Image (cartoon, rainbow, N blue to C red):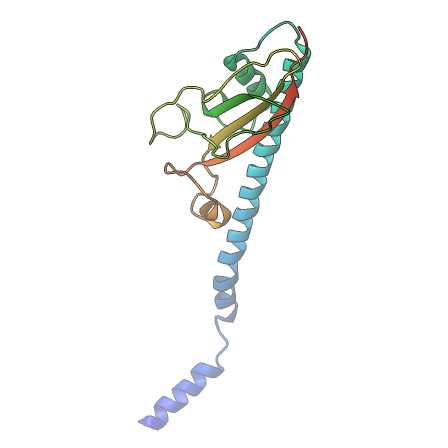
Length: 182
């Protein structure tokens, strides 16, 4: 009896049927996770780049538009016309504009507040955090924060990125300008 079991085990060990299936089952999930992570990283990078560029273009319009003090919604519209990859930009974009004293530098607060009406449903809608137009020759810092859902939320990079309570990622862009004389 034991001789038959030993012969069967020897035949089983020598048999190479299904060898490619085992390799496939081990390698393909890792390859798919790497692909999903690459796609997620690419999408986050494109969205961040477009938000940065759109904020730069909007701040250029604000700088060159002497004689007028743009309001929050006007700047959001300027940014969202160029930020095509930011989903539901007008509802998911939060702006913060702060006057800065160049001689007594304090910068912007370290805490970034991205909670907006259309994005994070776990929190109440908050008003504009701080939005103050500068006077002539005054330095102004602008921070834009947009939220979006990850493309692959349960795989690879989308799973490991830091998300809020609603499972959304946030991207932040910053810009500064000196208010031109009116």
